[in-house]
Amino acid sequence: MLRRTSLAVSATLIIVALAAVPASTDSLGIGNVPQGTQSDTAYAASNASVTNTLATTQRTSCYRPEVPYSTSLFPANGYDGMSSCPGADTGEDTGRRSAYPTQAGSNSGYPATEPKLVKDHSESDIRIDPTNPNHIIGQSKWFVSAEGYNHLLGFFESTDGGKTWPVQGHVPGYEGWTDNTDPIGAFDQYGNFYSVLLPYQFYYDGDTKSYQTNPNREPNPSIPAEAISVSVRPHGATTAKQWLTQNSAGKPDLVATYNSVGRESDKQWIAIDTNPSSPYVDTIYVMWVIFTGPSTSHPFVSIAHALPNGTHTDWSAPIPLPQVGGTPQGATYLLPHITPDGTLFTTLITTMPKKGYCCDVLFLDKSTDGGLTWTSRLITDTIAAPPLVYANTTFRDGIEESFAVGPATVGRNHKYPLYVTWQDYSAGVVNILLASSYDEGQSWTAPIQVNDNTVAVDEFQPNLDVAPDGTVSVAFYDRRLACPAAGTAEAAASGLALDTINANYSGALPPYGATNYCVNASIQFYTPTLSPKGHNIRLTQHTWDPQLSAPHTSCPTCLNTFIGDYFGIASAAGKSYTTSVTTYNDGTNPSHYQQQVIAILSIP
Image (cartoon, rainbow, N blue to C red; front, side, top):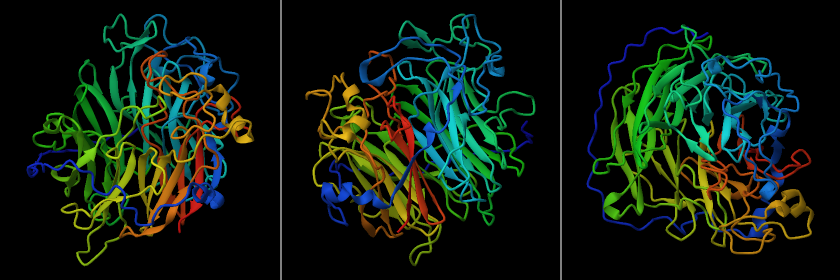
């Protein structure tokens, strides 16, 4: 169990008013591609030095869900409903013998009577152990029902540099909630891995999800309706069950809890200061937002200190972060990062009421005293917001920006560089832009376009990483390559024949040869001053169909589906690692479920 000692925190919020918002609505940077464009043929062949491994097909995982769900969309688009567990080989607690501890207070009819098979694995994160670059942990949503959006979080672990992923399972400790979402984690300097979770309750009223907090209706009235929580995988753990999930009172390790409709927690993230020379070394920062309306959110941070044995001090009371003046919507998408001197930064995004909600605002919050006080500064307000759902397909948009910091100072000011990338829809398709700051966010370089495709298609969900040598990389989903042609081996392995229902596509189904439809993942490398290193590199060996087995976020017959709001990227020992979705069958995925494909390549 976690040993928790007190952390006295006296928090003060300092909000520096942002300057008046400029009137500009133009999106700068579109078409400014420093490396120049490349042909689709060259791009398709650029993956020759990339290694792919389907991590999540290597084990069979099961767990007993809190809320069973029987609706199936079979045979459309590869769906096959919720299935009994055929026999897990992960060594995790599947709940077959007894319900999980957090399910003890469930109402009649809950939890499910048996374990269910984990099938789909959308949205992901990947982290590398600072004590051992061959030790890597990935996380993703762990679905037992794509139709019902019914999932916990799961993990997959490698100790051989990503070649194999023998240890897998759901992240334990919070099975009493219906869903457990938004995979994100961080290692401390001792090699303990912190997974921050967002467990929440709902039940199915027919095929509609209900979040009613009536103790007679909700599945489990003995636990909070929503929470921000933590599970810790201690250094040296070797089995799927080895997680620290409780506090000293034997209760779940909850950072914050919420019980009322109209105050929904979401978008949690974590950063841990691992630099021994930092004045705030071992400080853990967990950030999240509270939605008090469909588009109104309020950001918070809670603080604790990591201890060598995988335990931590008490979580501080939530500390509010600055919100942009004049924008009552607040902000979301917090992405905390720490420079080696202990300065804490996070980007946030909000919308622009005075521009008719056409445009999004990106800004930077900064703390120099361990997260206790904050200042805020505008980055840009000219972002043309991407659509909720992408053209031709039904999967929804994800996190709009990504943020990272450099490990070494750059320039005469000797400041640590900051990097931010974001999506922009001003050209009628989504492009990826990138900018940097070398004065702690006081000014930013003119944005450049990351994607170098020649034909206008959607490039989306950028994800930033800065390697130990300062190399900057931006990974993103890419739709420049057409779906495989009918009658080809690639089309068969991509499962295109299963894609038979798509209300957003006006062409013929299955979508053989369809453009701006199927997906790859790509990466672009830069020097610390954002000079490009070559062209975009294709990370995936095979193009895949995002319509297959895609979870339905609201209800089975609702339009919107899901491939994730983001995916993972990390680097160590001269190599870059990403984990992203694929539905391709490489021989281990015959049902074309959403799996996590690991891409590994050397950093130029």
